[in-house]
Length: 475
Image (cartoon, rainbow, N blue to C red; front, side):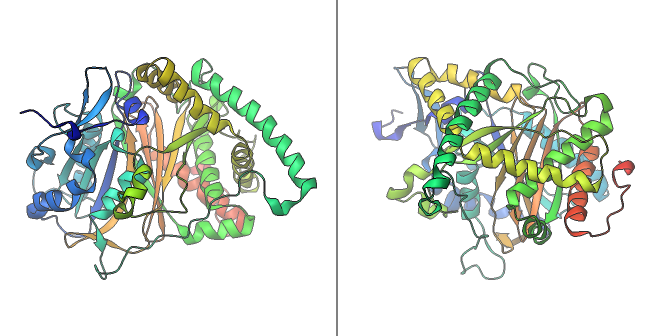
């Protein structure tokens, strides 16, 4: 069958990088169901809700006669995209915890067949300690970034209390970047020169990190070639957003500052507990930034309107952030250093144009060399750093999918050449932190305990909650 010309449309530059000979990055989203899963409505939901969201979900990636990558519309057979996990019946939730962990690791490592649209749905019907059943959505990152894919997923869900009401999200406030006319001349000039200096230093350092300057090999980074093809473990930990806000208000910082401080401190605690000599090895986090010029989350229905089409796809950038070093004696009194340092570093890097210039470098590589050359640059950027940190804003209300109340949700980026990936999503006033770790290198339970310990230490230091001083010694 011959396809009409309009059934082909170009792949975005970032989509080409993420599906190349050197990179194949995917996103796994997990919905935890409060009730046993009835999958009888799966195919109608795919046909009626999911596929109409965007033509990418009904397309495969092909290379045209000019060597350019294009999306090509094809007929979708939903049953080929649905997989149901099969395990022994009648076992304990802890038994199925292990089964689920192995299954999600297997899903993460399996490549997408190039002859089908780049998405899958996996159904895990067995009760784990967290849920009565799990739905796993695997989508290729070439389809869109977390913002787009989250919007697509939410378009298939409804409020559990009243499906006729719209979802609501936490208030979104953009940080002030650059010159503010109300600051006055005396403040704006030093800020301008500071921004120029930061741009030069940050951009130069970012280029070095993306080319030849590697992080140390540490308990969180093997640095081996092909790490993206190794099995991973995925663990999660939840924090109350109300408790995070208590820290935020007390320290007069942002929620992101608090969370980054927790992640950085927890990472150093793990490194110290695993190898004392390497606790302060050079470690860099790639913090992902949403670059859409919109004031918060838009529904997928809005995003696919003619005036919003440009908001779909991969629209993000990254900045290199050095993980602060651990003090000689670890206790609650110096735990706040990690929050203040995270605030200082991220604020300074936002007051520079290094992220913008890095995007220009990627664009220049694509235009003057090839998308494959750009993909190699992105691969090197990921491989030379120790971890990636990304977050998404989720709804405040409880969700339901086809009358299945959603108890919890989280996501994970897979296929990246790193030993450690951290993602976060808010839902029902809780922040779910998911940790993807290289199996055999990082102890997932120990790392999770260190993140929990870091949060407790920072909360105690900020509000005097009475967390025991020996929390770290128990790791």
